[in-house]
Amino acid sequence: MQAHPLSNRAARPIRSIRPPSAPTAAASSHGVSEWEGLAHDAGNLLGALGLYAELLTLPGILAPECRSYAEELRMLAERSTALVGRLLTNAGMATGVGITTDTPSGDAIRCLTSLQPVLQRMTAQDAAFQLILPSTLPELPFPAEVLERIVLNLVRNAATALHKASTPDGRIDVSLSVVAHRLVLVVADNGPGMAPATAALFLSPARSGESSVCGLGHRIIHDLAHRTGAGIDLRVLPGNGTRFEVSWPLHASSQGADRQC
Image (cartoon, rainbow, N blue to C red; front, side, top):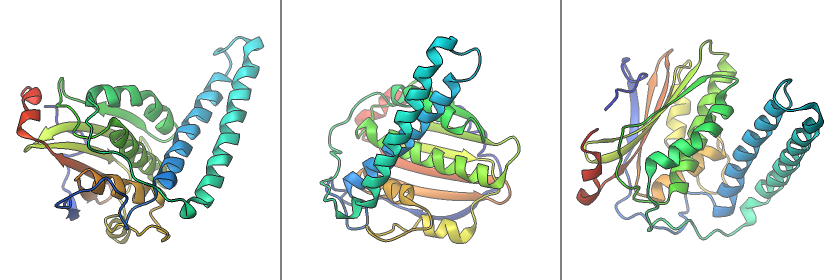
């Protein structure tokens, strides 16, 4: 299995959150409502759509007579984002029932490779993006939507941190592998490193309705991790970035597909 390029530095562990003994598909009191989380992640995707629209308007991409379509696409993305903002404003009043987490949805590699173009566009202004995957992985023990939403939120957080710090030669690496009978997702950046106080706040799930300096994405990650029995680990590399790890236990029958890793 290929070593993670941002994992070979001396790391200062903050602490870890281990998964609950009995995860449930119902929304927890510490999580976000389903509508609130979906609205937030829809905003992320619409933001990426707006970036694609901007790319299409650059000279040489589209024929002059077709550029108006790209502008209309950008306008629709902006208006949709505004509507999502209104949903978020009222999300505290919504009653979610939680995502269904008891039906595996298959191919982890396909899930992330299909998401890669969106992640590259999302990070293009602030960092070089790399997706690191082995040749095979076991079937996901939860819907692919869970993995997509966690990755989108973690990558967006990393890109924002690099942008705020004006990090030269910024880099964000995402990897998924099997380590010690667990499916391990790592999102690492080479920014200045998260402040210890912020890291401690990130590892403390905010209750629904409470504000958080870490943002709504932080609550979504915790909520999805809780529902799927995942553990969260955060390591700060002082002056050299932050490494997030989300891991899920694998059943013995699921690990045979990853013997090459």
